[in-house]
Amino acid sequence: MKKIKLLSLFVLSLLVLSACSSDDTPDPVLEEEVITTMTVTLTPNGGGTAITLKKQDLDGDGPNAPVLTVTGGDLAAGVTYTGSIELLNETESPAEDITEEVEELSDEHQFFFTVTGGLDVTTDYTNFDGDNNPLGTEFTLTAGAASSGTITFTLRHEPKKPNDGTLADAAGETDIDATFNIAVN
Image 1 (tube, one colour):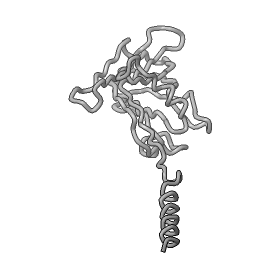
Image 2 (cartoon, one colour; image 1 turned 135 degrees about the vertical axis):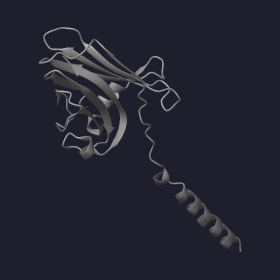
Image 3 (cartoon, helix red, strand yellow; image 1 turned 120 degrees about the horizontal axis):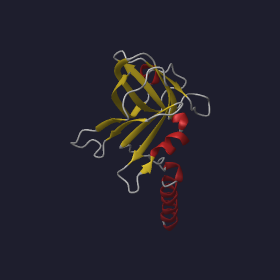
Image 4 (cartoon, one colour; image 1 turned 45 degrees about the vertical axis):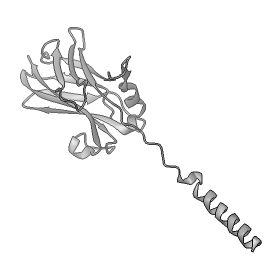
């Protein structure tokens, strides 16, 4: 009887230990980056005043609407601009630069540029991920003829790569987007 109790205790101990193996440890959950501010800077090639497009949403899904600003005037017809996008998390002090994280994980991100309403501009990517797929934190924007409309900047997380350059083909999830009213004069 004593041997049966010891044997039963031994078997029970093995079951308990095997149930606690490290294989049952869940993968760590990676938190999505918090992006409160997107600043798009358009610097005219050859000199001139830079144009800044900014979306700031310090309360995220809170009650306050995001604040959109455009400073520096209108785009000049026939001018090519060097564009850069900065992403910040301003809920932290000092603000965390999310642009660095997006560029480090370039294979998991891509900016898309959507032009509507007759705005005569074209965009071209100038930075890419390790597989030579577009990233878009750096780009050129060429202003055509006098016109007006909107341009939307959309950052997708885990888009399909390669894609045809449209949001419809990209899949993934939107990390941030902003639509700005723009004029070319």
